[in-house]
Length: 488
Ligand code: FUL
Image (tube, rainbow, N blue to C red; front, top):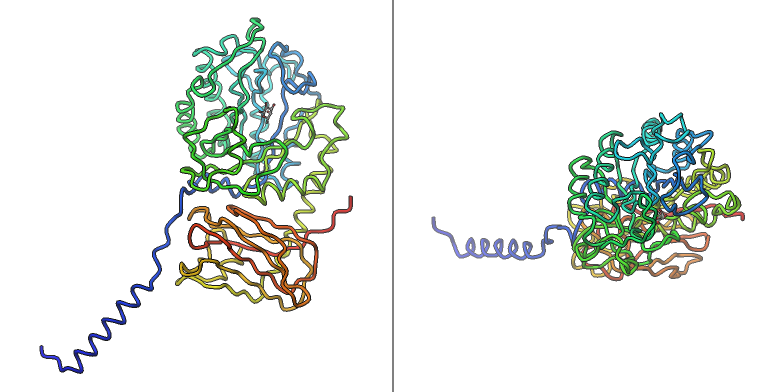
């Protein structure tokens, strides 16, 4: 086939155009750093669930039992796990984790492997199984169910030897095979020290790194409850937030160099912020008690955290890329105390009212860039699976919202799309009020969710700017809300 000069020039220009448009095509969107697995992802969505500390200490009025308590001391008079589940459900919580065995070794289920359990207590004439009752109540109320099993056991005579590890795994097997689905297994980092130990009354120190042979135990949990996430100070799936006050770090990376840390390591607090270039996805969980103690003490009846304190904790945990594991110390009757019920209800109403209306919806939304094939409408569709992506040529992506008419608001919310990794290193938030833009916040990481509070004001617009990011910004949802005034 012969081409004229004109035809040849035409072909050349078509080739040149297609080459140049190829070079401007975005790199395919791939994950940045480690990402959550499907069970961690499901867990991220729970955000708020209950811890219940209820066990021998409830009856001895202690925080840590020595291990020499008698099963006869465990005797709740009105125990009702359905009340616990109802309270949790009505409070907006998504699950309950119970102290099946605390450091004193007393078991809330009739374990085959010890006499130190409910089977030798007066409760339900020794026929009771609290783990069964609670797991059934959770099922009835549509709540997830999780177990805390203390690795430290101040009652068991063999604690400190290999025999105890077999005992610990036998107990864990009972919990993981007899009570249906478990969503989270909680291993406490506090372990080793003085105790009763079957009458030895001595101090037993263990090498926290090697004694428990965690890899074998973790493998057992994976086999018996594959969907369960495992918590310990250092993961493997969820890590400790580094304090028991209810506050996550302003900078919270979900990734950490997991294999350099272990449960119970002395300086774990150093990992509160996570590690920007960490190798594994191990997000934080914020555990805090609604009272000063983890266990019920009647003298603390008037020290239940107030609504404003609980709100502050919520914003500083759920709103700082963490989840909130709020502890309820069930009382000696076996009920969540009235004072807790009242404040939990107040928190639930506050949160419901705050997030009832997303004022960003239906307004004019402008993004500095949008990668081909994506749309910024994904930011307002309440769907965690859809997302907006900025272009790679845009080093500082912005999202600007202009409201049809001024609206009183005080809360901004934004979520990264986690399956593509945690990307944002810093951001700023400005509000347009009386025709002028004013910066109201500068922050660092975002992750699962960032909640930013600012003074209540009539706002004409907001501008969210990513000031530093590892890669293109990828957000699933955002919102603008008005929290009610706290009258306390
Ligand atoms: C700590 C324990 O020693 C406390 O008693 C409580 O169970 C808390 C959740 O974890 O390490």
